[in-house]
Image 1: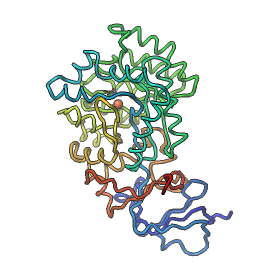
Image 2: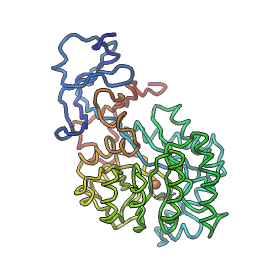
Image 3: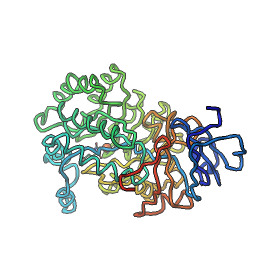
Length: 412
Ligand code: DI6
Ligand code: FE
């Protein structure tokens, strides 16, 4: 094949490349994108297409908006059971932290998840993943953390890996054994952490089930000192780290995460100036989760101005989970980020593409539409990019493409 012999040419699209350093959305009016071997081989205004190319397939996008496939870089989408009774309890005045202290919260999902078979977990997670995909997601991160013992943590991660093999979505996994202290270790969090370090993490790593290691650093979960020991173990195994930090209080987790070169620190409502500076220096991404902010009726907004001023890249994710963010649409998260955190629609779209790719350590592969990257993109039935963030409810997805191949469901 010559240099201008392509597998598939998409023309007549309004392309938001979101490439860095470009004006606004990196918009190309009447754009074309060529795919070869699953990667972007050419992109630009179709007026520059001149002759001299061959394409095995040719698709007229009929003026649709094309963006990079969306990336949901923080989810807990494998779980069993539900927490609707806790939703009612909270409306009757019991706080999220109080429910956790009474043995509900994360531990109630742990009980249901431990009791579920691998097949049951897979089926439940598959439905959630397809919903996320319907909001334009082509790459998703999935955490363990509802097993809190070796078998169930591994089962959750195997389900996540299988979703990545069987569904047209790229899956990244994180081991979140340090999510909560399980009931059998109640009041003995150091002993539990010891077990995580000695048995769970080595098993997960040996089976190649985790791409990163995460933890929940919070009064109701693990201290900075405990998280540091976990990060040291992760480092020894060559696994990158990330952290649930400053969600309900400031525990200094973001500074610690930055010291370990974390890919990201997530939540960050209570992040202070020292945390922002540390993240900027380390190049860690700030992953904001407005779904949890909204659902828990948090009052404290993350320090957006400081993050902007120090140039910390902001990513957004659903945090999809049964207790604090039962949000199955990444588009709804764009709207929440603009409405609740005052992000601009441009910042919000960059946050679920380019910056979310950085938060997963895959910015060379996905997140923008540039030559050489994987041809993961979405065609939308909207005229302008801001429509993706402005609307609540409509899911204007026309088609999702992974490596240049359309996501076709049986029967279509
Ligand atoms: N913070 C969260 O918002 C989720 N995990 C975490 O560490 C909540 C998980 C849950 O409530 O089930
Ligand atoms: Fe989370």
